[in-house]
Length: 87
Image (tube, rainbow, N blue to C red; front, side, top):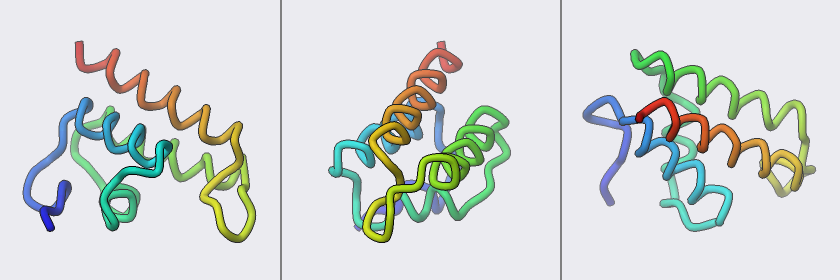
């Protein structure tokens, strides 16, 4: 299994795609954990990572979910913001 974040700094679009896949339930087994567990030099990517961590606190989903449905919408907004930043 290829680890997305282990060898190089991801682009804004790659991180946006990971967030979108997480929301859809289709990201790789460890992609989300790798993303939220690593700090990044790219300021846009790091800010998105921190915002994603806040989503779990601000929109709790209970014992079996990262966040609520409103939190999932917030994650998609973060992904959209990353895509805009990459243009």
